[in-house]
Image (cartoon, one colour):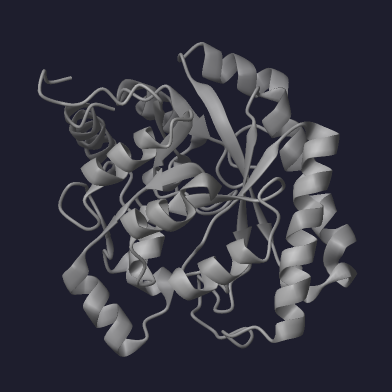
Length: 303
């Protein structure tokens, strides 16, 4: 840490399989899980997320041994949900959530990142449903998310953090505000992904001012504003935009991460800040040097 950098002593920095181009449990275009663990530790990170369930070993004994011997700890698991579809999808949702929540808890983590379902397929770009929810779907989304928060807390002792995401119904400022206003702060917190929020036109610093108490977790990410302008103008699907390099290496993009980290520190709570640079698909030798440089950059910011 440089002597001029502020001390961000409440921020716990980590990375995730996403920063190694991992989007799926099993895909020949992704690096093997052992290589990810080796490289994330060598790059200087202490905390990791589980990534897509089934990519890392799902046996807690195996995963505990593999992470411990590399000096790694797990900050969160991730689940994908379509709760706007109402109570009819609850059983199916819970079957997906339960295994991941159990592994997350077994690894000592306390957070479950909840990603809403995509209205446009992230692989093919096909439109799957309307990009705008009806009032009834909004009610289902918010009430079922509260139910998820309650069940996950009661059964697994975990806190859900909902992740606004491109090409989902919880994306930019308007929909994030609507979602937060309609959900119980005691049950539902936010995972602010700085890159996704910027991608969808949001201002992370403004969100800290208006809903700071709801931000329970951070994903550190930047977008390339020039590439993003083309994405927005042409209505490019998210997966295609990522393949085109819209998510870029810090500190070359937006938003600037130093003020975001300062705002996070000012909340006065312990907060994970997990680096995610969407790169699926990418050459296997590309992620490690970027991860190491990004860790060095975050140290220069005081994190």
